[in-house]
Length: 56
Image 1: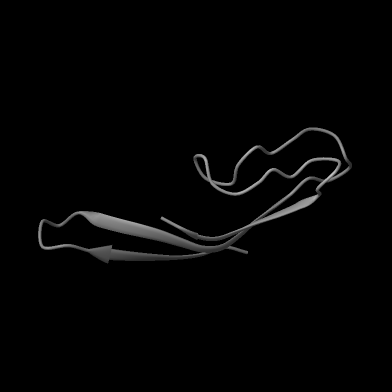
Image 2 (image 1 turned 45 degrees about the vertical axis):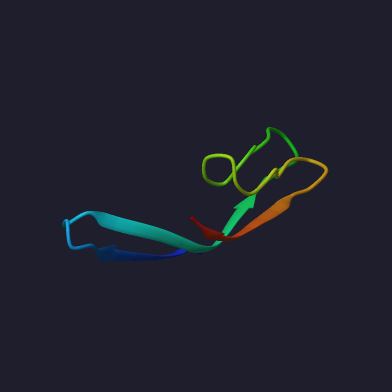
């Protein structure tokens, strides 16, 4: 389960922040390299679970 928060700046830009992200590799095949961009992970057959506390 991922939680996210969106806020609006004075310039009406939308800022999104992700909290408590989890990636899971099921069945031991394939690899998730990162949860978002270059953050979090990997989850693969050796490490089935990877957490990402917050982004950005």
